[in-house]
Structure formats: C-alpha cells, structure tokens
Length: 487
Image (tube, rainbow, N blue to C red; front, side, top):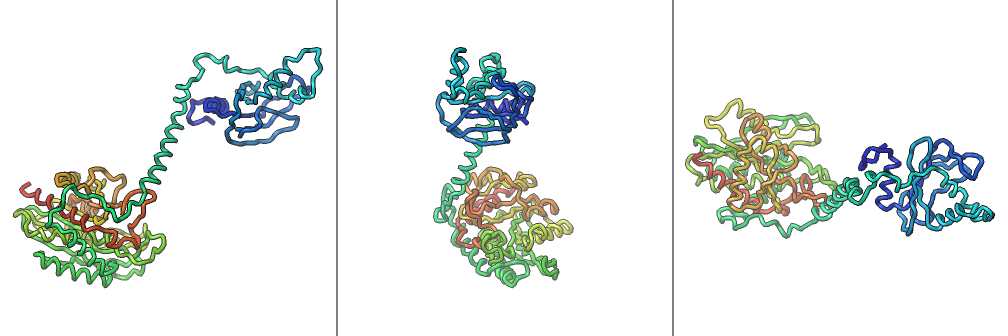
C-alpha cells in the first residue's frame, strides 16, 4: 500500500514521516518479523502488528512477554517535549518510529549509563524492555543524507493534496449553507436595469397565468385541457390569428386506452418571407411526483405549463405591429410530459408529432428559427445558455442574449448551464431541422443544496411566479423578432 499524497515508498515508513511532519505525537508499530534478540533476555519474543496513534496520556513503545494482537487508535496528544525515535527491524526492512515521554527517556538513559558496580534498582528492571529496544540497530534521522531531509517547503509540497481537499470541503460547506439560503419570495431579483416599457404589462401577463391555472390540472385528454383549448382558441382568434388544433391519438401509459392529444397552432402572416416558430407546452404533469410530502397530490403547473403560454399571450398584443416581412406561428404542444412512471413513459409526444408532420409536409415558407419558452415565470428568473440549444441553434441563442444585453435585461445570464436539458426543442431540432433555442430556468426558484424546490411539486402555483419575469421575457423576444427583419 502507498499513501496517496506521498511518493511511492513503504507505507509504514511514509506514514511515520508524515505523522512526524504534521505533529502527531504518538506512533507505535510492531510487526510480525524475525525474532529480535533483546540484550537482557535469553529468548526472543515475537510481536504481532500493533499500530497506535495515541491520544495524550501514556506514550512510548512497550512490549511484554505475551503476544500482542492488533490494535488501532487515532488521535492527538499535547505532551510537551515528546521524543521521537526511529529504529530498524532486521529482516524486513521496515523503518519504524517510537515515541516516549521525557520521564521514560530519562529512566532509559539512567539505566544505560548506570555504573557497573551499582546494582540494578526495581525501577531499572521495570523499564528493562524499553532499554532493551535500544539494542536494535537504529537509523537516526540525523544520519540521513542531506538530500533526504524534508524542510517546511518539502512538507508543503507533499501535503498539497490535503490542502486542496480541505479547500474543497470548505467550499462545499459554503455552498451548502450560503448558496441554498432562502432569500424569500418577497424580494424578487432585479431583472432589468431600466423599466420595462408599458406596452409589455406584467399585470396583464400575470392575469393570463392565473386564468390558465384556474382551470386546474391540465394533463392530456382531461376536461380542464379541453376548456383551456377553447379559451386559447378564442383568445388568439380575437388577436388576429388563424387557429387550428393538430390532433393525434396516443396510448394512455396506465390503461392502454386511446387518448386524444392536440397541439394548438395560432398563425400570423403565414405568407411572409421570414417566419418564426414560437412555442411552449400547455399540458401539465399528471401528478407532482417530485413532492416528498404529497407525490399524488394536485399539480397546478403555474411555472411548468402556464408560464410559457401566458408569455406568448402577452406578446400576441404586439404581433399586429411586426415588421412587414416577419410572420410567426405560436404552437402550444400537448403531451410534453404525459408521464406516470419516470423511465417508462415517453416525453415530448406533441412536439415529436409536430416535427414529423412538418418534415413530411413542410409549409410553403419554412421557419427560420424557433424559440421555446418553458418555466419562465420564476420570480427569481435567471436564464442561462442551455447546452442543447448551443449545440443545435448557437446563433439563435447567442443573438437573443445579445438583445437582452442591449436592453439591460439581467435575467438573461450569458453563462452556460452545466447540465443538458431535454425539452420540446429536441424533436424540433433533430427531426424537423428547425434551429430552436430553449429559454428555461430549471432552478426553480434558485440553485443550492438547501434551496426549496418547486419543480413538479404542489408548490408550483401562481404565488411562486412573477408577471415581471413574464414581461421581461416578452420584451426581449419581441425586440429580437423585430431585429430579424431584413436579414
């Protein structure tokens, strides 16, 4: 065995040096080695391995006439003036270290230098076994070559992994206790450097989100989903769109029965030469399966389900003033997460069906790019680059963040999220070939080991969302659309 933070060498010898360097004041070791002849005994006594890292009190290497079995203890001692001694066990090449307190050392010294004509005292015989150990050939630390002597710098070089490990532990504790602290939802983050223009109304956007949530849970095929479809069809029609439902039949994961899903497609200016796909999912997960207290409870899906829809509803008020060469389709995907068992049931059924139909029967004017909104209502909204978006739609993604920077929308953070996000943009990119970016704040409400988590829980309700977040996203994406004119 080797000690990981030292050069490769006999482990016991290395551990001995290391403990000496860092101030461990007791280390005892005996190994099952060829018998060692004591100077004051007639017969050898084998010693079976014992390691002891002492905890104050007694110290020193002591043997008895009986076989000692394995023993291990760890700790520190504050004994002043502790004496460290190295010796060498013949026959096995292991360098050992003994430690004794000053009193024991004085007794050994007195016995060793006792005049020949003075008889041994009882105290001398009591420590005869300790004195006998001096008969073992020793390898003194002062006898080592100069190149092998280890100073402070050498100890530091050998100890750097321990230092790094300590820093990592400290950083982890800092993240745990500070990164996850609850700032409280009464203090939302400052999302913009300047006021959002009045045409993008936080109050109106929040009202749309609350209206959708008032329908209750909206899983695929439910009565609440049908009421939502009717409401959204009327709403987008009144705002100048032509609306259709793209229907398909899917299998219920639990019963195997046929369930009708329907993507809602609202189109503005389908004949214009520059067209964009604006999308979100509008179904909700059947149950809040991430809720530790009530995994079969009621899942409203205010952020994960309603926020993207509410943002596009708010933006639709601006579509009448789009540049003359820009047209858009708002597509709301059904069955994004018609999932009852993680790992068994399929995600993205609605977007996959849409992508397949788009590829088989492409429109006269194809989409130049797509923007997916998901979980954009977080009161502490922070949108980072998503890795799959950079992989499939880097230019689209970067250009939206550049627009946000120009507007002073701080909710768009130009930093890449560590994990990939699997979302409706994958079928659009991989099947339909539409370069689509995903605007999503997956850390709901914030990152941190101790932070609360609302995703897929009963806590995903309108009170955890913000109309300001919806308006900030609407402002940014609308201005980005305007910038695409003539390109």
